[in-house]
Image (tube, rainbow, N blue to C red):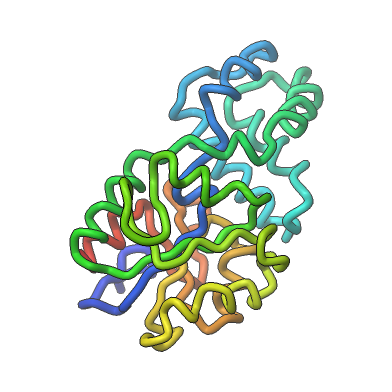
Length: 236
């Protein structure tokens, strides 16, 4: 039987909407790596990439809400090899440092996959829980609304700007008018949080997909992909 992670039959979607954090960008490892090296953490970029998804799995395991990041921070510092005796302080420092302006490190393969999708004419957008910075941050090197230097999006929705955040599905009310010609279930929503992204997109009638590059959610009953290239392989 083909697993939800790898299933791909024809062109199932007319459009794709993406979360930003964990899908297009990560907390900047070039900032966090030297910060946490003080506590014995690995400075390798890949180790920090992996640590983000370990943190998101920890949040999902306890259904932590958007404001609750303690479990994420604990899992992150553990994942990068901070010794047990140093983890509490390291996690505290991470929690004080990992604020919204550090969510800016562009995931290279995600950026490349967006180019492939754009080249194929796939309509795209972004819906993100954020702090008012997402549009300007993405415009520096990823995407903008309409034609421009980077990948064209139909809409970029920032929860702080519109006043509603996932898991409330009403956040998608600010994006779906830009895709009015498509049925919601023909629009994929790609996120990295079970509690925030899967729950909200299901409630909004979209097709949920979890970006799960390290197979942390094996056996889940929703679709998972290892990279945005999996979406591009299907649609581009």
